[in-house]
Image (tube, rainbow, N blue to C red; front, side, top):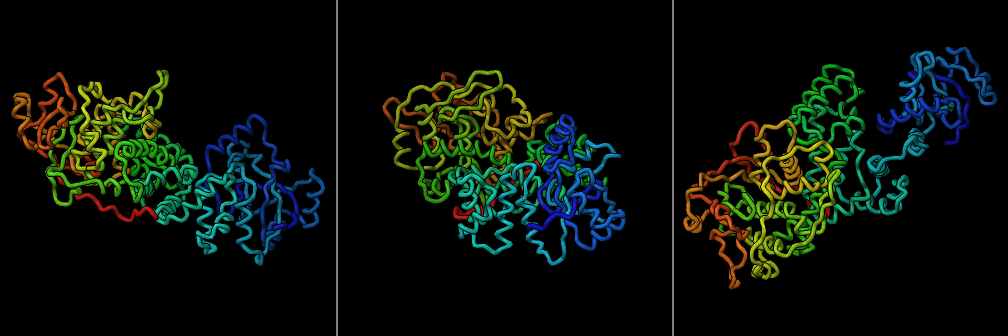
Length: 607
């Protein structure tokens, strides 16, 4: 739209309004305020002038209230010293951009100096609204569009113009703000996955949650072939933020970027410091600044404080997937599954129902799970294999733990003995293949302890709760990452979330609900090894014997040849099942009731 300007004037900040567009980023506002403090706020410079549209009738009314004529208004174009202050009364002037500058000006300028310079353009009702909105989107911005904003614009453009997403030329037109070819390619691919776009569109209802989307990682995530897991996490983002905003669509619009950045990674019910910080920032107005109703603010605060989950965002999604990716890589290396279909489906093709459903309670020690109705044995085996892959990743891959601050670099390598032990675990859980059979027949001799004992689980600060594990975190994972310990993570009183609590949240976020709870034994210390060896309900793994034979599935032997006999005497003649819905029940309340594992739902690879 090339409408010539009618004049350049000063207008009170509270008389300015903006077309619907980007969410306010409070960090950007604070940054601009700091710039004004150092360099001054030059509102009359041409680069800082904000374009605005005024309908003809409104312009006549504003000029009358200001005591100006159109001729006097036009003088401001030729004479920079002549910039009259307009009186708008109850009318608002719609600006095309400059929202962050105006918000920063409100924080920096003194009350008597509360104005900004705008360039007025005439606007009548015959002008097509869509052309104005298009100009709003593609006008210069204070900050570049985020990937989330670009995705949302592309989806809006496609829906508005009824575009077939396979029409690449029109799709690319909808993504003109993406300068990277690879990102345009990845977004084009994403737009053709309706199961993903449906969940992302739900998230886009919260303006601040557009921040954090990383289009450059989409193809890498899809390559994992874990569509069910990825979509489950995206659905969880919407679920928790919908709860935070009281399931009210009106409140969703008030979720800004600053609120999202502050709350992500926090777990109010398990962290005293998180609860205190949230209460303080709600009271100060830092969180949800656009909500003025005190009753609503209090209800939102109560909703946040009731959360016993790590608050997710698209940023935590991408970070959590890095841990998921480690498990996928280990399984691919060790199991060599087919590349057809999802990872779960390709592993299921290698699975034969075992005689017993087993739950690993310590490294190489398994207890029989008393299968309740609806328990999907194959999915139980799949999750345990995934957990074991993550637990022993430093011995089964070249992906080293993240380096701790002020510590030496950590190393990882593929260790052959650990590969054999992983193959034996997979075979015991029901997975069968020629490569596994060959690996399980290998004689590896004595294996050193797989992990040093952990006396106490350390707590994790906010950013480390959703990042790739550090060296110290990996050591604790290696010692304790088993399903029963995951269940108990929420039974233990804590001031801050521990490593196991965070890992439980990881499993809860990506995998189906309803896995079996912990299986614990009575006192076993007085039992003999021979008694344990014959017990059919307790199973452990063993390396091959010296003659190359292996211990049978129903026998009790050790995963590791250990000089400590107590390590292989753990099974008991009495197994007590603590029935609990693993990870999807508030473990503070009750340990009763075993929920059925939920269906996979609509998570097809092609979607």
